[in-house]
Length: 183
Image (cartoon, rainbow, N blue to C red):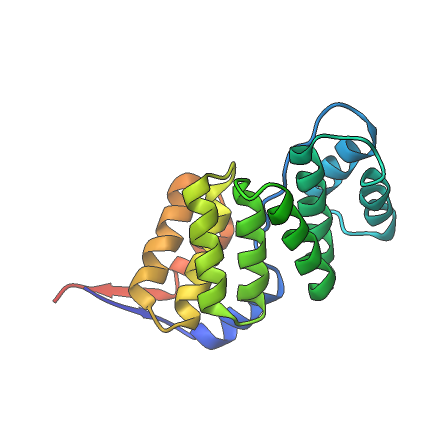
């Protein structure tokens, strides 16, 4: 089979501006839970960032602290504060290296910076560890594959993202750019 995306460069630039991020659920009340809700709601405003930063002053177990770093990192990534986002993802990975979302989100950051191989390596690690929203990992890995000129793998990962979340429009839109032919 031959896979060819249409206008890959132009669309790829749009995708890299807003990678799909995988937030972490933190429960138990307090600011950490509020930070989690804000991250899942797609927020990145100053108040939400302050809530997440304040949450890190609270007493919590390592998993919830790592999740809070991830959630704040997602908000920083949405604001294109890449250095700060990476610091949060690195802190989360150092605390809980078996929490796949830390790896997947740092991979998304790398992909947004066109560091495709590094991004793919982190996303693969996160997928191996397991994540609650693997469709986002597959979507970002598809973008990385396109950046590495591997259209077939990109197509397959967009397909996998859509299989996992059938009504998600982002992979649907990307798949429309491909023409699949049999050889």
